[in-house]
Structures are given as structure tokens and as C-alpha cells.
Image 1 (cartoon, rainbow over the protein chains, first blue to last red):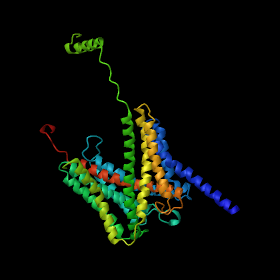
Image 2: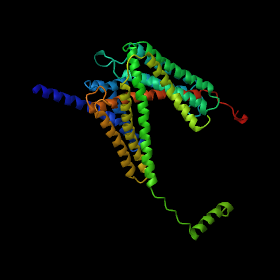
Image 3: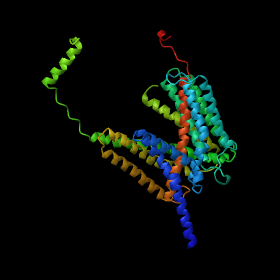
Image 4: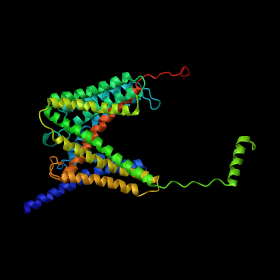
Length: 272
Length: 151
């Protein structure tokens, strides 16, 4: 009985710790962003969102007992290649021919290099010992969720972008071909992962999770579209229920005379 | 593009084709059944619906500022999210329909949210790469001279 009570108290403590150090910060991130974007409290909103994000990143140390914190650990593990990729993409775009905020043309090459290095780091996280390890030297369970989802979605978006460039732009065939090549390259990385074992994960595990990643992507896209459709229906039905605005009465004689006098003074220049 | 309808269909096809190709190759190599995929699809759908609904509910406050703070859309959106939550509860509670390797409703819901956090991050990073590469291709081209006066 005493042992059971002890276990129950311990469970409650760990649940409370997880709530304080992981779940509440997770809720505070969108709240902080909302406060910042709405303009109601810009700086406090940014501080709230940023500090909550940091708390999520370090949650595997603040609440090591909670399994959910593996996601925070994964976010921390991929932070460096993600920032490098964002830096590289920024350099690649603004090192080109842009009307505002143009960077030196060398930024284009350094940006490309940064993107290549970030992709290489992500590959090394799968095929070399850079894989994020969590408790007791075990692989972070969310890494095998993140990696196939990233590869599938990136190859899909690059392919769609290539078609969009050809379809909506003029003389964009070269650029579309380069984007298609990027899509094929990423699909090739996924294919290699399907055939060859990673450092800590097997090819079979990757293949199993590729199915789940495809289901995840389709589910998320469908869910988001449904939510947007529900939102549009709510707004549309409310706007439809509003009465038509009443027409304003025609101008009086005095008002017409006043307007004519203003127009005359501008056209004729009598005051000058 | 010939028309707006066909262009959207072509874009959707281009987006889905690489996924289909990889999944088909996976199927040809594959050695196990994937019954868990439907559960993952269902969980991802209900979770993203509810979370996106909550984000849009926050967006309604911006809308309310321009419409003398009406109550009706707020209630309507809450009902829409409520239906999503109800469907989630009904499907997850039903033993083997959406329940993955979790002990119960609460564990499954929390697992779904964490899973969504990871998948959404992966999709966001992929979007940064793909959209960034697209704009880099566009800005990488030499500016064309349309009129002699530009020189």
C-alpha cells in the first residue's frame, strides 16, 4: 500500500514537472507569437515565445523522466543544420538580382555551400555517428520520424515548384530543370536510406517509417485544409447573415453648393 | 498553362508524384504490412485539424477588430473545433481504430501533439529548402533588358 502510494506520488510529480517544464512552455510559444503579431504586446510576446522555445529545447535536461521531451531534444539536435540552411537560403536569394536588400554576389556561393553543408550534416546524422542520442545512448525515437518526413516533403515541394516555374513563368526551363534535379537528389537520398542501413537504424526501419511519414504528410495536409474550410464556412455564413448596409441620403442643396465652390476654386484658380 | 483548373491539377500531381514513386519502390522492396499507416493518417488528420482550428480561432480576434467584435463567428469556430475534439475522442476511445502504441486516450492525444511538433518541423524545414531554392533560381537569372532606355 505504501509502495503504491509512493509510486502514485512519484508519477504525479513527474507529470507535474512535465507540465511545468514542457507542456506549458509549448502552449506559451503560440501565445507569445500571437501577442507579438497582434501588436498588443510586441516585445513581451517575442520574449515569451523565445524563452518558451528555449525551455522546450532544454526540456530533456529539466524533465528527463518525460518521454515527450525527446521532441525537444531532437529540435535542439537539428537546430545547427537548420540555422545553417536558413542562412544559406538567405544568401542564395539575396546574393542574386533583387531590387532591395541585395547582398554581395559572393553570398550566393557561400549560401549554396551552407545549404550543401547543412544537407550533408543531416545525412551524416543518419549514416554516421552524429545521430541524436537520447537516454542511455539510445537513438532519439523522433529522429526516424523527422528524417523521412523531411525527405518526402522536400522532394514533393521541389517537384511542385519546378512545375510552377515552367507553368507560370516565361523562359524558366533551365531553372525548373535545376529544381527538378534537386527533387531527384533528395528522392535519391531517400532511396539510399531505403536500401542501406544507417549508423544506428536499419534500412527496414527507415522503410517502415517512410510509410508512416507519407501517411503523416497526407493527414496533416488534409487536416489543415479541413480546418481552413471550416473557418471559411464560419466567416462566410456570418457575413451572409449581416443585413445590407443602409444607403446614405443624397446630398442637400447646401452640400452641393459647398462642393461646387471647392471644385471651382481648384479649377479656376480664382484665389491666386 | 492552359487554364487555371489544369494548372492546379498539374501542380497537385507534381507534388504527389515523388511521394507515390518512393512509396511504390518501398512497396516493391517491402517486407511487412503497414496497417499502422491508416492510424497515423487518422491521428495526423484530427490533430492537425484541431491545432489549425485553434490557430484560426486566434486569428478571429484580428477579424473581430474590423467587425465590432461579433460573437457568432467565435462560437461557430469553437463548435467546429469541438466537433474535431469529439471525433478525436470517439475514434481514439474505440479500441483499435486510432489508438497506437499508447496506454489510453490522454497518452495518445499527448503523443499526437508531440508527433505533430516533430513532423511540422520537418515539413517547415523542407519548405524553407524548397521555397528558398525556388526563389534563388528566380533571382539567380541575369536581369533581362526590356527596353533600350533601361541601359
